[in-house]
Structure formats: structure tokens, C-alpha cells
Length: 173
Image 1: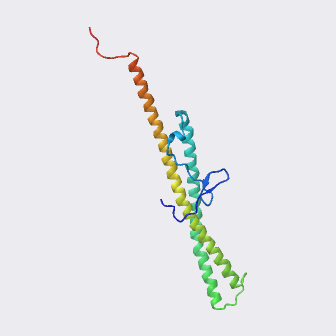
Image 2: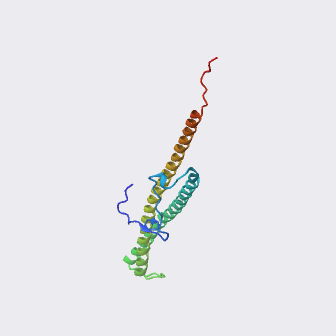
Image 3: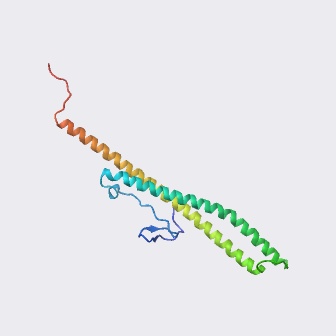
């Protein structure tokens, strides 16, 4: 996925790279050996990757809820703003908590903020989906590395057994 138009990564409090709103980047596992040295380290690594995926999915659910709320709220604000503009246009003399100018300014500000927030939510959702995919790929790479190591260990044991003199060939009688 392209990252054009997005703000560059920043560094969080713990030194990890984050997106502009503080969501950390998932580590890209190019070489499994950089993360796992022995087969004993595979389980804890897989658990930590799964935990990160769960955290990203939790953030994704929260953002989806927030987006749904914003999508409901934006038309409401727009309708109210249109009403205030109509009252202002007709020079209506009604009792309001705010003057029509103040109400228009306030609602315009709220609408702009809601639209910006919606845009950020959409960007963050795309970002989170990328990070979840990255973590799923990393999990698969570590798991596959372990499978290869098991096969190597198993083939190494068979070679050792074959060299130790255990032959099961036909015997001469």
C-alpha cells in the first residue's frame, strides 16, 4: 500500500517509530535469525507477535466505532449549520444561546474538526491494517523457520542413526 500523503514517522517515548498519532510501526521480520536464535525462543516470540496483533485489532475496533460516531455526527452538525445560516440569511430574530454569527463560527469549527478527525481515523485504519498484515507475515515467517529447524534436526538424527551401524538390510543365512 502506498504511503503517499502521510506524515513521516515520529519516535515515541520508548524510542519506537510511530505514525503521527502515536500508533507504533510493526517490526518487519526480514531475517528470522535477528529475532530468534534458538527453537526455545520461538514460542515467546510468536506469543509476543500475537499479542501485538491483538493490540492492533483492538485499536482497529475502537477506530471503527469512532468513525461510525463521526459519520453520524457530521451530517447532524452540517444540518444545524445550514439551519443557522438560513436563520442568518432571513435575519431571524429568535432567542438563541449564541448570536447567529457565534453559532455559525462554532458549528463551522466543529464541522472542520469532525472532518479532520474522520480523515485521521481513515488514515489510522489503513495504517493499522498494514501493521496487522505485517505482523501476520512475521508470525508466519517465524513459524516456518521453526518448521525448517525441526526438519533439519530430524534429518540430522536420521543421519546419526544411519552412521551408528543400525542397518536393517537383508541378512545372509
